Image 1 (cartoon, rainbow, N blue to C red):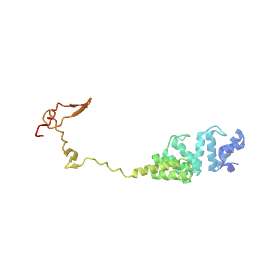
Image 2 (image 1 turned 45 degrees about the vertical axis):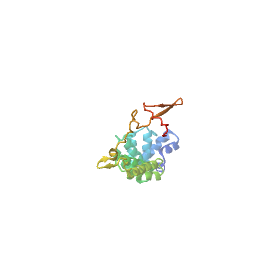
Image 3 (image 1 turned 120 degrees about the horizontal axis):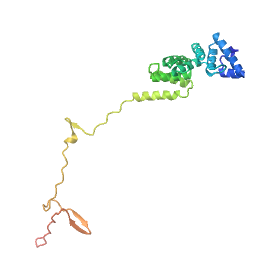
Amino acid sequence: MPGADSDRPPMAAAEASGSTTSSRDVLRGYEDAAAKGDEHAAWNASVMLARGVGASVDRGRALAYLERAAEGGVVPAQVHLAFLLASGRGGVGGADAAAAAKWYAAAAAAGDATANYRLGGLHRSGSGVARDDARALACYDAAARAGHARASAKAAEIRRTARLAAAPAAPPRRSRCWFFGGRCARALRPPARAAPEALPGDGLAAPLLDRVDGAVALEMGATPPPEPDTGPLA
């Protein structure tokens, strides 16, 4: 009966029937139950019509059943409708991030991991909702607790960005030049004096010696010092 199968995945229910004709009967049963107010049957009928199981693909009817199921509180239907609205697929008539956020929020309130993760992404980017890293972090944390594989990494990224933003700025690098009265101390330092240039024969500087082949040569034309007096007064 459609009521008994309404919580089962539509593919499993159809395959359990064993044939294409049976799939058509299953679809008809879901549609009959949906007409009597069974939102889960509407969700299953939507999936079957979207995939062409039991009937030809019919996006218009599939979307109508999907919206009925989402409005009836069927969480998987809410998540799927939000995805179609965010991407503009499934015959919804164009992307609508604000409407997608509404349905993700509804499913997230019921604890759905995927809805929390995707709602966190909308708050992180500011698509369809106000950009709010705090709410994005709360959504990612909720998704991680519900078992979403990538939510923990997204939450860690937000926390790392917040730490970097809150870190104090590095102090300015000190200059090695001290200023006195607006002038650099290096500029006030007197220039180093050059050594006096030795002139040939002035006797002020000793001649530069260089050993060449064992002999001592005088460079720069300096006059050699006089020989010591070896006379009687020495």
